[in-house]
Structure formats: structure tokens, C-alpha cells
Image 1: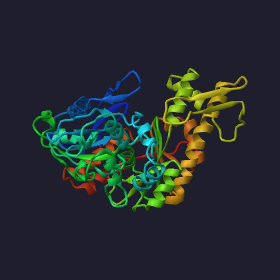
Image 2: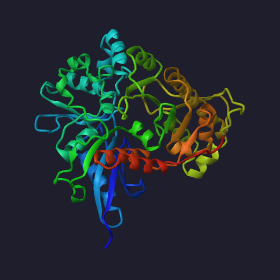
Image 3: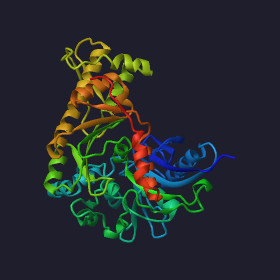
Image 4: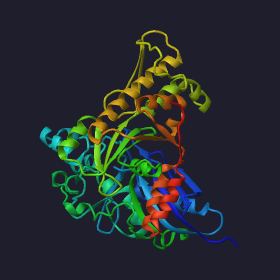
Length: 460
């Protein structure tokens, strides 16, 4: 009979899919599982999901990752990362009274824009977020304007916090997720009356803070048996947990998460001032609590993955080989055609615009797309550097970084860039926090995990 293995499970509840990895206490992946995230899309583009449908799917993926391990297992801890702005309002019995609205849904944009300009400027300085519809506050503002429930005796839980609540029965707020709501004063790290008053809520709307790595409690018997008794922690915002999983979370590290949204991240081991936050937001960045206690995460996001994907699809490059063939032609000093222009309309949309004034080859269209996305990324890196100082090491993770042509563009912009070969860095990072929540000797465990976080330099 096989020996019982101790494992920790990290799950990444993402916009596109839910992914989980079961790892042993040396950081070796023993089992994985995934499933698509199934949103409900209304006729006018509203996007939401029943939170219990999402939770059932996440719990099933966690259980299947543990079941995929050969032999018997004892799940010591579960760490949950993923979506930051999506969440629900629950009543006193723990029942959801709102849908979970997708973070990119634009509900509340009009109500937000109608607020006084002075308030929107204060919002950016206090919360570290742009005064736009992506934050949770915007959705809550929309719900109040459209006859939503009185919030004074109700509670907000992020989607990840709700999953932990379903597993353990404990309600809590993880600080990096609270930072994406628009309800948190970053200086005091307390609920902010400025936004709470506008939605008719009090400070109790956000439950007690439970930092990443601290246990919400143990899995109850209502969950799949293989998970019973495991300690559960909400590891926090996926981009931050990705950086931990990839080993790029030091104060001198620059992390580039190369997905549909291309995210630049710096970790600053202090709390920023309101003036610093206002400056960062004005330059297209955000600043909030990190999953590492006492630190600030400075984030900048572009849609470069979406733009590059749309361009390759337009050019008929759908296979990996075709994508490589076109993308690998990019060179920093190649001549450009001024007659090819790639751009995006204003706002957070899925549209990409290509203007051709004369005939152009696929390689020339690709070069214009690369120049466009790199210009966006350069402005973010410059803004981060002004606050955090120069970086000493730069690490990229995600599918786009593994195309050599894209890598060359990024390395031209961020000299010394290396690409992490960690698969599912978010799930790995969440598992590291799960180990801490499970009371495992985190020092030796995390060292074991990090020795398996390798990076490879591709082309300088």
C-alpha cells in the first residue's frame, strides 16, 4: 500500500479558467486540474456569474487536483488566489443577495463619472485606484442606483473570500483584495467612509482582515471528503501571488505577467503617501496592499496580450508554429512603415484598430503592433521606477513571454529580463501560502519551493 503523502493545494480562480495544483512539501507538483470559468453574458454586454456556481466549480477543481495524486494524500492546506474585484454582497445568514459581476463589466461607469471631480481625485489618492468602473465600488454604486438592498446590515465578500467562507464557515477580508474594492483607505488600512457613505454601508461591510497565509479555519464536512480538515487561506490578488510563485517579489525585482492583460509589478516594502498614489494613478498605475505584509504592490496593466493575439488571428496565425514564425521576425532596429498604425479605442474594451494606408506584409503589421504595446509598457515601467527606484532583476512569466520575438521586445525594454519556466505560478504561490496556513515549517518548505522556481534567459 502506498504511503499517505502530505500535500498542499493552490487554486487560481481566473477570468478564463480555474486551475489547481497539488504539491508535496518539497514543492513538486503531483496533481493538477482545471475547468473553464463560465460567465453569463447578457444582451447588452453585462457579464456576471452565480457565486455558488463559481464556488462549486472551484471546490471541484481543488478536489480533483488532490485526487490526481498517485496513492493516498492528506491535504494539509488550501490556498486561493485569483480575481480581485469580483465579489458579492451576502446577508446575515451568509446567502448571496447579488450576482458576482465580472471585474471588466462597465456597470457603474456612468454613476462614477457623475460624482464630483474633487471626490474622484480624492478617491485615486486614498484608494490607489483609477476612478473607473473596474473596481468593486463602481458595481456597488450601480446596484444602489438601481434599487439594490440596504447595505447597512450586509457584508461584502470577494469571490475568493466567499469560496473560503463556503469551505470553512469563516468570513474574512484579505487586504490585497480589499485594495481592489475602492473601499479601503490605503494609508490607515481601514474601510474608507468616503465610498462607504455613497453606497449606504458602514465599516462593518468589510469583515475582519485576515492576511494571506493566515488560516480562515479548516474545511468542513460539507466539502469533498478528500479536503476535510485542511487549513484554508485566501492568498490574495492573482498578479501578486503569481510574483511570489515565480520568485520575483523582492524590493529590487520587476515582475512582468504576460497574459491577456500584461501586468508590470513592483514590490515596495512600505506604505506610500497619498501624493505618491495620486501620482501613480495619474500615470496609469495602481497601488495597494501586497500579499506580503507591510508592503505595497505597484501595478500597471496594458492589453498587450489581447492586442498581439488579435493581430496574429487577423494574420491567420493560429497555430503555435505560425505565431512563432511571425513574432520571431521582430527586431528593435528594423525599419518601420509609417503607413501601418495599430491602436486601441479609449476605455477598457476588447477592440483593436489596424490602419493600413498602403500594402503591408504580415511582418510589418506585427512590427507596428509590437511597437504600440512596447510604448505602453515603457510608460508604465518608467512611472514605476520613479517611485520604486531602478530594478536589479526582471522576471517575466506567462505564455506571451515564451515567444522569442515578444521576449526580445520586452528584453530590449527591460534589460536583463529572464523568463520563468514555472507553470501555473499563481497556483504555486497560493500553495506556498497554504503551507503557512497549515502550520507547516514554512522556512524549509518555501526554500524547497523556491529552489524549483527556475528562470531561463532566452535571447539578449
